[in-house]
Length: 214
Image (cartoon, rainbow, N blue to C red; front, side):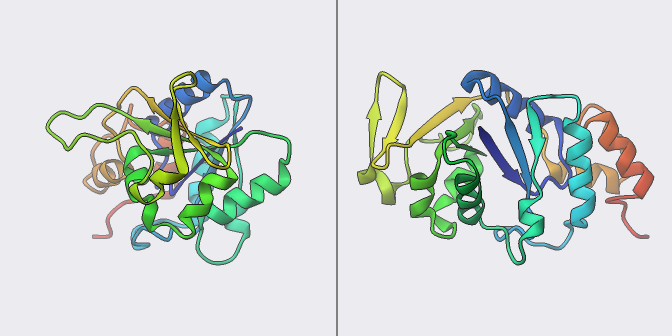
């Protein structure tokens, strides 16, 4: 089972394409999108109401039978910490292999996450990577502070944690789309067609989301 958390403010085609490639590569029967209610690592100003973000994810994934959504971080009070979410899914799916999916930018900051040392003891990890010209190369390896807890296995092409869980790095098709870029275009009255799903675009227009108050 794949688990993919995020603010999804709003969800866009980069999210969807990346997750589809990971799903296919790892043969997940189910990939769960987990919108964050109160993300601990982001400035909450500009993040729209949780109900809208949840609804947009539902609209975006409804035609993919392998994609589902969880409102666990909305149902739980306080900030949305990944370690709590992973424990929740571990308790609910005792005999299922869990794979926590995140992008390489988020992985770079994982040492700032709450109880990050424990994350790898609860779940397998898949880090989505993509080539970037002119930027500092991304090192496909565990966090420096946890290096002694991992060994690389040439046979499975992954890092093995002392708990037995794996850390994979999967290169995906890079779509230069971000939620920030989408919001800025909407604020400026520009088209976001082909950046977000049509259903999400219609929802944004219907509810007047991300429009700048003049």
